[in-house]
Image (cartoon, rainbow, N blue to C red; front, side):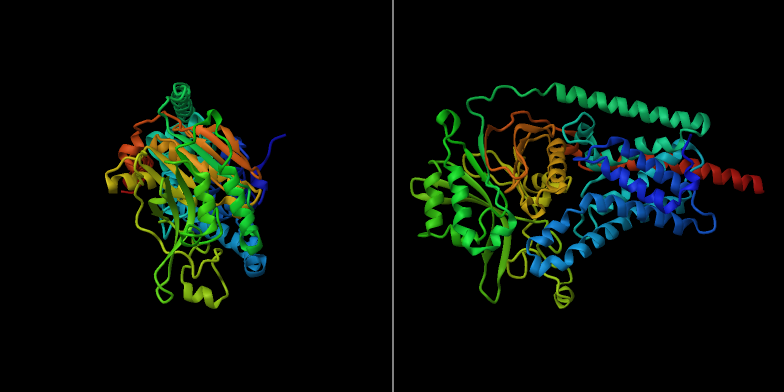
Length: 533
């Protein structure tokens, strides 16, 4: 008995296509779900002849709604942290998030159909992949961009297939993944269909082999005596506790006591890392001279140690008040704590950290999730930090870790090549959901692209060291765990093609795929015109 797709309503198939594609992503990892893109291509190729563009848009949009509803449902948890002020927005947030971002999928399918597809199986698959990948790039750049769960990041970071991101980045891998997956839509189209499927299979095998060789050749060597050592602190402090003043001392004590734990071998770590939003107060206040909090933190740091802590800081007067979400570096010296560097978050979360159209949104009763004045002010474009005596590193605060090319842009602007990345994130907002697990996978792609390791620190999980191939370390603090990770920074480094060229390889793939697809279409149109005359 075979499944007759023609008998199933198209809107049901569209939702199924998006849901299948979403479930292919970690932490679900149901990779056969990639065939959802083949189903979507088939749906767009078989739209109603009397209204092809409208049908193509709605089928793409419905697939996107299912995809993003599954991929971002966890944002509702953030609105339930302070349920009195924000709880009413939770269902609206999920609905508007999924429906709004799905517009990119609808527009991609409409554009593909407007171009007219291509009569050849190979050309049609490549054209669909090129158009869709182009709109995925737009999704990551329009307004502030939201590149969550890019198609190319379906592969588990650190796996063989994920290594292709070192060559073409996550956007290039998106195009390749789409072309491979969508080729299943044309397998019944005779010789041309078999060629398309064969090319897809050969590409899959080739890229998997490349990735397998790359990861097999990077077994971690014993750390050198001079290797940088790190202590990552995860105190498992729920986000709701940070809004209770009675919890403040307990929170500070939790981080201080974990930091004070004895070190394996007796040698203190060079760097101690606390996550974004570790202490629920402005860093100007709790690190102010003479405070008990400053004294407590100072006492548990060894001489020469650098503490990296995600914190908000304030500047200006009451009339000109600005708050920044920052990564603060302080060094323990004989004289006490001394500033060693500040990075202010550049990519702020809309509605979470600032309000777009704030006048209108405030009138409607919408508030930012953070309880910091009117929200945060964006910092300058990214640049690495380099405290004295330490290698340069690029801070990525929370969802800045989603953006391909972010670290590369900072290196290019400053002329300083970072040796590693520090991703301090506050995934406590999302509780014990799939969100923090997805975030780990997505941010780990930045290690693959840049060829450098990542120190990832969160308050409730997942915290770990990620090596330059995107693989999480053996020591992981998962959801709901409290403890420390003491480890030497992974020593492998790669000079990747993506680090050199950025999205240029993706652009070339886009042009080549689009040209091949359009070539079939142009030849078909010219032959049709020739037959008429």
